[in-house]
Length: 496
Image: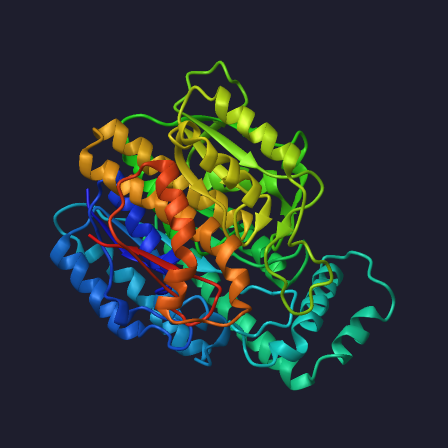
């Protein structure tokens, strides 16, 4: 089996992590060179990327094409919100999709794809948005929510919609709606390609969302249209984006496996599944259910079932913390008490009789430091883990943890080798180094300022040492850097 992958952009979580998943599973994967893939300041070159993809399909004859269409349509996830391309230019790029399966002549080509529903962030951070977001971000979010409610026939306070509109400069409103309409039209067109079987499975990813908003309204319309086309089983939409390529890889592994995987599901807090998930407009439990369904993992509450895996979701009741305080956020959720949830999580791990996928969702944007501290004291519990993640949103955490766990399970089914075990150890090391060592320990020390690699390595060194000492994993030299020259993400590169 051979995959060709098109990532969202060149961040480690979207470019490096999918490769790690494939290596753990023992599946060869081909990705475009970094210079063809988009970054924070420079979008991908859709024309060059499309040419590269066509050549790879013809020359490699892959079994699966797993493609983040945002890179080919807009130049990347971020440029899908910032790009100024016309509607006709965007729609013209979609025509390439019809050619892909025709280029594969030695075997049938299965195509799984992602396309984003344009997000609406409830803050004033314009790092990944158009410049006007620093002035109107929260106003646009509130206006969007009222538009959704009003369009759907829900009651809104008299005059509230007009007041919300008046707080946003007309030219800004017009530009924002023009970009939304362009992207929504492209997403509708993608449904045609699914209906023609030119795409076999499509995820409309949705990052940074509330319960209401124009993005949620678009999601409802797209899923309804998929039902009308008779392709509802081939189309999904749920919170998450950065982990989507990993999800598509895991779904491919499960589909190609001679047997299905069955996992139990447990939460470290009694009612933790009901806890609202930050940036997602729904509960943590709903996100877990959707991510599992997208991957194709069967979940059960029956602990006596013939299980392959155990999924443990570490979370609190009532609220989710956040290691990051963004402009415009009213609540500071950077320090929560999680002692009871940690105690329960450790108990679940101690009782676990099958390999565990641990989804650390107490906080957005990083691990629960209290949980990781306990894990590092108990190497025997680390050995029970076939996956760990605790980063960004709940969807990112759960989707990437499930993907790594499925890759490790798939390797076992196929015949776990020394090379795959080494890849697994490196993947687990990178996850803890990123999600815990950097996001919860070092990032706060940077005060929002990127630092040279040498300084970053100095700050990271003691925490990487803790991970190595506790895990006993054989990991060669590690290089750390801030690839986008901002503090949001780190690259933890393992020397090969």
